[in-house]
Length: 210
Ligand SMILES: NC(=O)c1ccc[n+]([C@@H]2O[C@H](COP(=O)([O-])OP(=O)(O)OC[C@H]3O[C@@H](n4cnc5c(N)ncnc54)[C@H](OP(=O)(O)O)[C@@H]3O)[C@@H](O)[C@H]2O)c1
Image 1 (tube, protein in one colour):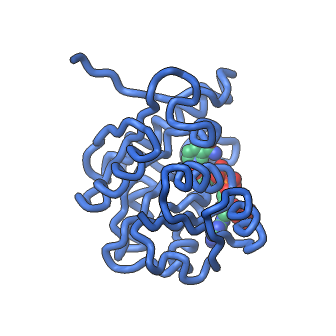
Image 2: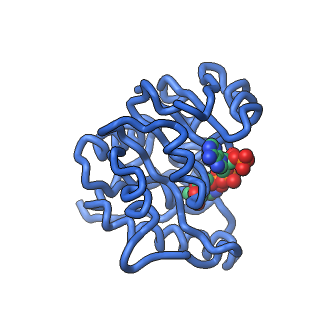
Image 3: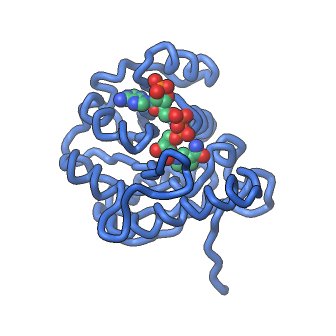
């Protein structure tokens, strides 16, 4: 698939690494072009593209900026009608120990409202960058779960295909509204990792019998 990653930080660079490894055609864009160039150079096969128009031609766009920057980044990228956008953001408070919204909405729903032409899918927000960078089992012996929530069947399928190609186990978490559950789940993961001191080599998963 042709994938554009917007953001060249912890998650953006980990996505580029795993997507290139899985054989996808990867473009990376950042606010600072030099950072995108640096990430692309570190992952042969990836190319850096300007932030303006970065979504053009992509099958999937991954928005790997902070939540507060996501809408502006997607508008600059020029997301096309019906284009799949994977929202990995968590609407965190400044100290990372809380969420700035929830219960009656979610970051995903707010982004979907602001960028209505996007086929938005929530996913990967419960996967620490350190886990993503290391790979889908990060040496744990188990596949990490990627929860996907969307109202668009094609977008959910795209996210599922991408996650599966990188070795993750996908849990279909229903419609986009269920991002209201997935964002607090990431909050718990962050608490356990940083607040309770377990570190970032952890990931939530879902067990079922049989
Ligand atoms: N880190 C994790 O373990 C983790 C796990 C799951 C989900 N997430 C979520 O993933 C997102 C990214 O987290 P992160 O840790 O990778 O953050 P980060 O390291 O701060 O990276 C964010 C990147 O987005 C770039 N950016 C900001 N505005 C932009 C714009 N308008 N256009 C293009 N790029 C823009 C930033 O550029 P500048 O450097 O120029 O500011 C930066 O490179 C957040 O929403 C976070 O909640 C993070």
